[in-house]
Length: 283
Length: 121
Ligand code: SF4
Ligand code: SF4
View 1 (tube, each protein chain N blue to C red):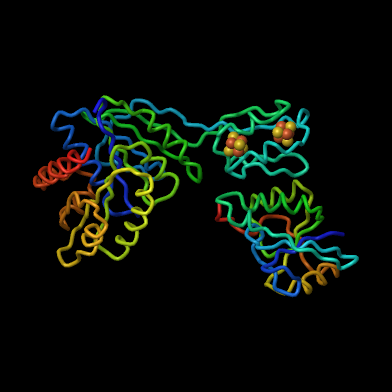
View 2 (view 1 turned 90 degrees about the vertical axis):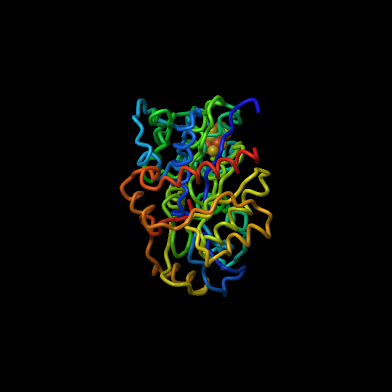
């Protein structure tokens, strides 16, 4: 492989322990001397920083270019509204732009026959970068109430340096922000838990990721020997189970304090080693 | 005067659709002649985002001066205002004919601010 791999850590729903897996994998890999980038793409609720405790060195605003129509020039031809696939322009008597729906694709500006459209940046959030020990850290922070997260996620992802192993902490779920995160990753780790809800959301995630043709595997967090439904599902679907992390009260306690588990639960080092070995053999 | 009634079906005999942006049909009715035609809103109904805005555009294109419906989200509201289309509200899903009669009699309140959260971004 010419560049180091990128791994997205995702989950069908929130609260499965996705960030736990992501930060420990990052810390373990860094401890082994790998060059690591941790890119938190969960921009509505970035919380990898709570555990990695990076020193933030820079914060840059992320904006998307939204159209502004010069009504004196506009001939009301309607081409801008017709070309917008996001329904961000309504053709009333004159075009009316809804900036909060605009993805900043630039199509309307291009299509306007009389150059009546110029673009103005609209802030959607911030990209923060810094260092967490040896780990190179970046995270997006979406402005409160901002619906448009994919452009911010892309602004985080362009910080990727192919010389380092990149871990993308994905938002939960299966919607556009998740797709924006996992796109072009070399591997997806899907973190789930053994409950009917966990299985249901895992099923949706599998249905989303499989057509994208990206290789993925499952980590069962809070594994319960009495409930093997997730494992059975993975067997049926021929999805590799990369790790089963047992339920342990001490994990939750340590997590609540914002600490890494390695000191209190040294066996987590071996777990991350085994997990990484299973990911590596699939890259 | 031409008005649009949001409807779950193609006839005014059926109940009004209470959600402007996600109405199945727009029925364009002439308050003087009573003549009515149904217009499919399926394309906007299934839009991933901006359904209300596109619905407002459709209503404006039909040449309506008012729309009778149950609720309008903030973006659709802004678009309808910009298009100069009045919004008249019914409080429950009554048949379209009844809504039209009440509108003509001036019984329906006219909306001056959005009355739905518009959870479909
Ligand atoms: S920039 Fe793209 S998304 Fe934004 S209004 Fe123009 S066409 Fe629509
Ligand atoms: S494409 Fe240009 S001229 Fe045509 S309606 Fe849009 S802004 Fe006006």
